[in-house]
Length: 259
Image (cartoon, helix red, strand yellow):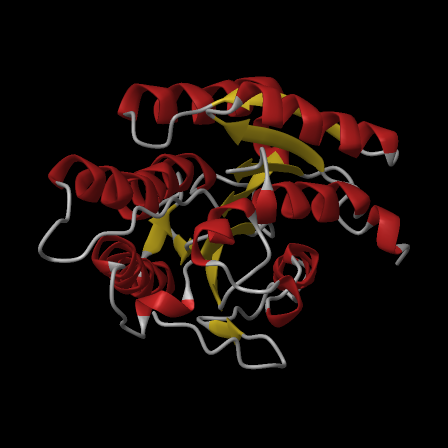
């Protein structure tokens, strides 16, 4: 199959797509032929991502989405299904934020915001998506990719909110994966079939993105976001009979930073 047409006819929603890994993922999926809905609260960054997709011959539009707001989540998913129907069958949850803080000075509002963006938001966006794709035609499989973080399984100073939110997101992802493997969908004739969706998760270490600038890690010790984006694309392109529960992706060199 032509690599540029591997995802032709499919529509993907990518959150956090105004910069960093979200932007790289939007570009990678568009390169493979998908139409990409670029979702972020950063309108200017989203338009820049869209321009880059169009410049490379891809197809994309911008979708306003605040992953922490339930009405925004419902509206975004509903709008894409209204416009694209069953072609909308890819969701990549990339959006994430980090607010450093030690136990003696951690800010409650920051802590809640981090958990809302990194865990609650993507879980409930996935919920809205799954309610729609459960009715996909026979033989179709929807793809969801959750971008977790190596911080979900490690611990370090000054990152209570981020590490805690990603650990919660990882376990929530495991629960959803189990449900998708166990849950059957009842057909109009009374028969049952497996749930027509799969959920992959990637667990990357430090990437050279704007969010990491606060930690002062040299760029050559981090992964380029394009490398992780290519991995996300490869998971979506896996044969529909399988999925990847968790894939850790780490730099070849050890950053050795205090987290």
